[in-house]
Length: 98
Ligand code: SF4
Ligand code: SF4
Image (cartoon, rainbow, N blue to C red; front, top):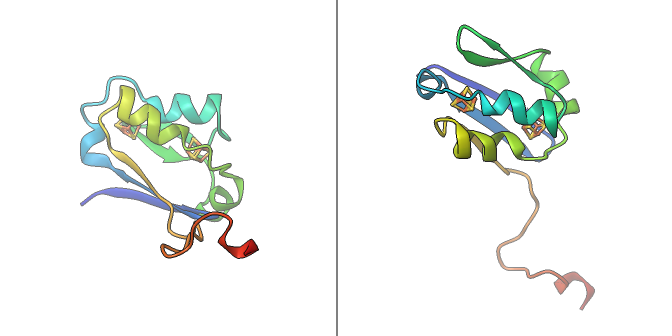
């Protein structure tokens, strides 16, 4: 499978390039330029990073807009995984103060 995968501070982004072939909007690019850090450019009909994955990890502001725009206007190729969000399933907000 042909994917673009890169990390940010609390998770990672995975783009399934096979789905980008039918995209009419390039919503990921637009979203990141409007709300994020302008991390994508479109090359051969698919988004690529304008910087190294290490820089993208540092620069991404975790706005989540790219996933929303891809699902809303694109072909649902882009998925955000919040791997390190730090929520313990057994704890509820405020538990640590008790
Ligand atoms: S909006 Fe989604 S489907 Fe369209 S180019 Fe971006 S990642 Fe691919
Ligand atoms: S989460 Fe925001 S800053 Fe990060 S890649 Fe997506 S749109 Fe860009």
